[in-house]
Image 1 (spheres, rainbow over the protein chains, first blue to last red):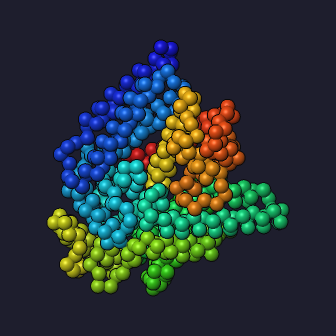
Image 2: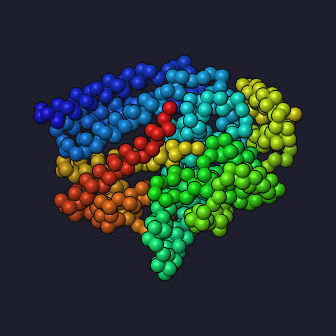
Image 3: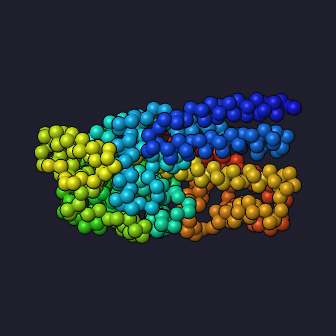
Amino acid sequence: MDELGGYFSGAIRQHVERGQGLLARVPTDLPAEFYPLAQTCQKELERILDELGELQKLLGGPPEELLRRFRRAVKDLKLVETTGIPPLERFHEKDDVFLNRLVRQVRSEIQSPLLPPVVSSLSTDYFHFYYYFNLLLVPLSEGNFLLHLPDLYHELAHPLLVDKHNPRVKSFQRAWLDAYARAMEYLHEERQKEERRRSPQLFSYYLQQWGNSWAGWLIEFFCDLFAIYAVGPAFAWSHLHLWVKLGQNPFEYQTYLPMSHPADDARMGAILAGLRIAGFSQEAMRIQSRWKAFLEISGFQPEPEYCRCFPAHLIEHIALKGSEGYQGMSCQPVTLTGDLSVSAILNQAWTCFWQDPLSYATWERRAVEELRERCAVGNCNYASLPR
Amino acid sequence: MSETGLYSGLYQNLHEYADLVDRVLVNIKTGRSSENDPSRQELGELLIQLAQDQLDDLPVRLIQLALQNRSDVSRADLDRAGKALVSEEIDEDTIRRLELIAQVLEEEQTRAMSRIQRWMS
């Protein structure tokens, strides 16, 4: 065996050990809510171990493929170790079981086409969805509060845009493709204008950068819109709340460094357009007025390039396409009249917050307790909304 | 509301395609590939699809967008490699193109992973 062969042989064996060690660490005394994640991790580890076994047989074969396949197996193993296993080892019985039941209830209310993710309160940052494990990480205390739970709906939309086979998601994906084509058409027109004007090269460079980023931005817009059509104004309030607490320049536009998400003001524009399409014009006006008030005290101002990066007509078009896509999946649109659903309680939370911000915390504590009790017996619906 | 939703989906789809390219390459290099090989057909059709302007499949479109700024692999390369795979005409040039595509897919998958890892707890 040559030196490279010797290296691969030893390194593969080492990773087989690592994979077997991880397999042994998948706990067996888990709450049923975590079974899907445990099963995914086990199957993934078995697949990786099979692949490593196959690589051992290929040691004399083409080295380029061997290297790439080995590196892929190592990456996959790392993902299982850093993302899949920790929520199983460190699950928080009380909080995680509640959040899982809540998300199942949400998914059932909106009749989303895909199975609900497993939820773990292990995030050290904010909400993170991991497609390959169908895993949603939320911050440790998120299950004790209601004002940001509408963000769960945004996360539920992510897998709808990457799923390859479920026919029910196709209308949402087609709507995305239509909206993307419109965004590219707009940027093409802008580039032509720039050429005619013989403007400085810098702006053409921006247009090119925006073209590279619009796919990612549109995914975020569509997830926001899914949330708006599924939970209504509560999601818009949640977006406002998050920006007020942690947001940066809401009118940011991409110059040199890539922007993973569209500007917060552009997102709010799409959210408000979505609310109007969904029949919540009054609420949209109220939210817009508070949004403007917060923007004013923040001191941020939009530059002309921001308006060209996220033009209002394109944002309106995206909101319409999002609505078409949502309806095409036969998902339930949010209704807030006489409804005792999770979406109703999340909207009720925001109403209570604005009615009496000081006593809201007391109301919220009681509402969360009641919701937890109902989820504990397998029914997250309220008999009546908490007062 | 991080990037993990997008990049973990992209990671998985890139993984699937990268795996397919390597399996087909091993079969070609070890003389076990024929025109009727289902994985070779699948890869050929996928590469032809990736070279098209109009795609109505979002997961494939996202892969195409991830590759669009790569100067080392053009749409013409994808198209030629794809057409060669669905025919009997596998030559050294096709193998070279497939190697390049495999390398690019691996790099993009690594990039997707680094975007995911930024958020890992």
